[in-house]
Length: 428
Ligand SMILES: *Cc1c(COP(=O)(O)O)cnc(C)c1O
Image (cartoon, rainbow, N blue to C red; front, top):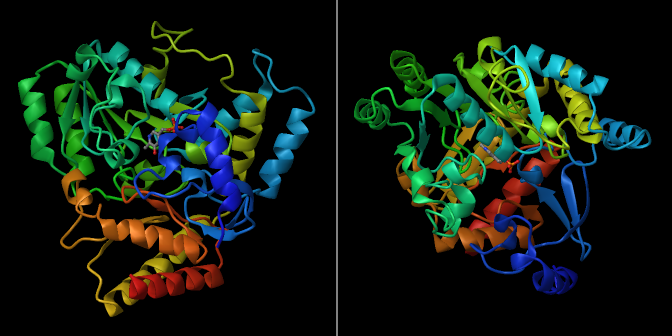
């Protein structure tokens, strides 16, 4: 395959955009080489600027659950755009998507829409602090909750890839209010509660971690967090930006049968447009401005194009009773195929999967937290990545990322992918 045009576009981009990209992981820094510039995408396929077709396992990092250029969503956006693209005034469609989202997600009464997952998590933590009157928060090493200051402390994927655990520009004051625990390790959380009695406002967690590769919660871990929060008067925030409307209609809360106090959304909820949201019961949401004292706002929040895309996406998900079963079956088929060819080719590997989130780590043992996830960050991965691309399969350009399976994938696509993995692991 040729990347002539992508290389040229990357050179031009670097002159006017830092690193040539508007979000760091796109730059291929951890795998080397030239980022692929996309021209268009349809269903399960990307078409790049050099005319190559790639089977896509990133899917915009999650949003394209039903595939690219999904017609009902595209049409809804086109129709809405003809009627004006932003007003800064309330519109009916905001209530329609809020009603639908609240009806799909367990344990929430109200939802507020913002423009990104970052904004949703930042606002959820502010709300938790306002509600509890406490300042400290607990996050887990390797979990990512967007790029706002209090989360840029051991934050997974992009940051892990670059080996920058803390970003310059985050003040010591902010860092000291963020306490770090280890994923799947309840004792590390208990200890923080003991050392910081009555000071912890909330725990924020990815209920299935997806930003250090896919790392599922062990049995009892999320239940344990729920109990620790209840015993200590802290709120439990599920960051469902990745898992929401992907693992089940009601996300991880539904899948694991555990209630969080605040839930954040992004990715799928926007159907490919910039949308985030956070939701909770009335007693918590009523703390939010203009009803309550915790301030939060946005000029483009609830933007009509974004709401049209999001509403249509949620409607499609809501009416398709078989969707999550189908996604699980497709991903299980891929998992089985990957296990077979990697075993046959004597590769050391770990595959983690929950529903349509899956990742391969090239290491032995188990991957249960940030430290064990790091064992898969090997030169082998770089080779694997580039050779897969050469064979028409596009996965995330970092070993710390999850693959997002879309319903647009056919079994023929999955077979082609498994064959490509077989071929490249024989070649490396
Ligand atoms: C992607 C992601 C975010 C950040 O969302 P943006 O829309 O990129 O700001 C937050 N939390 C999780 C779990 C994510 O996967």
